[in-house]
Image 1 (cartoon, rainbow over the protein chains, first blue to last red):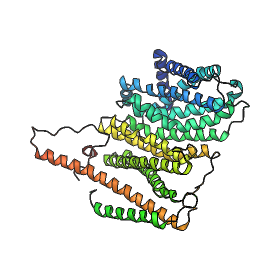
Image 2: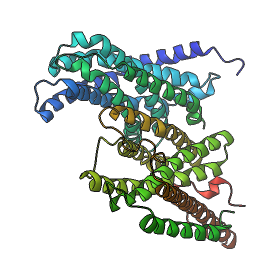
Image 3: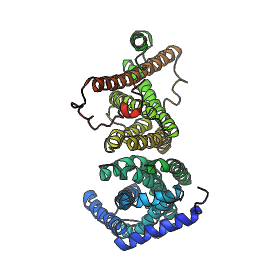
Length: 229
Length: 250
């Protein structure tokens, strides 16, 4: 390992590769975005509401974003498993944690891009109170949710990708692990979306951040074992 | 190796279980508010505690597997999670019965322990499908261990977060379980924990013994049979096969 390149260089190279692949194939981001907008329409008909606010709005937003994220998690490692990306990476002297960091960063960026379109679409289609006032708090929650999804999604994606039924196992494994993220996010944004907007309970941001941290550490500790062959 | 002293353990477990049940029904006082119904507490709560401890033990054994690379640790972790899953179904059923009797509903969302337990069970329900979906035994063992560790860490965190999310909705009645029980109830409760633990341990040892015995039987058959009539291959399974666990010879 002495002649391995510095981890920052490796992560940068891997992340550039991820983004280049995504820009050439458009495999994840457009599908996730379209899925989230379609789900808002489904919620409109399913709930039979033209506008939602309060806890209902929180629920619709976070469940939709989470399901969209699961689509991304399912695709995250498929190309590497099928087209030899893993083998190429394992042959290089690079530290294996670099792959986790690069994939996690890629997933974080995908989610952010999706939300740039999907959250305004939600405000336009369904949200009752205006988005502007809720924006600063919402941005903080979105960042923490993305971090949590990136940590858990990368770990679960790597776990599920080399199984026979990866499309089924990915969501089944990731959704229970993401329930605490939904709890934190929904409880944080419900006051923001309420008709007289109330202050956001800050302790849930702290809990979300701690949850993200714990799973980031676990993912970093265990990722090596998923790559061994 | 795992078959030794099983009979003694089985007899002790049976004796303690009988004694506990007798104490639960005839010796422990009836609860003032819930009456006779509260007796299910002596089955439900110990079983829940042992199930969760079993899940966490599965995670600890999985850490040992990843550290040493010896697959017998994977087998131990698998059996621990397997037995706990069976116990967990019992916990959900008894909890549901208790909720129906005490609150009039089969399911109560404002009871954080019940909800967290369901979440934990939903996660662990994917353990066997995950194993089954990976054919290469070594990779299966590693993936299962990673899962067991992640899920083991998830257990206490999940309970904390769900509890926090309902804390201001629903005041806790049993804040700490052993603290506000009168003497006799507390003693019976600890007896119940002891006997459920022994039952868990007994079943764990039985499954380990059974896995080893069938592996040994297969090995003997292989020795006896001629080369041209090979044994049928093992079916694909979610359980780790002992041949791969490298302990068949012991």
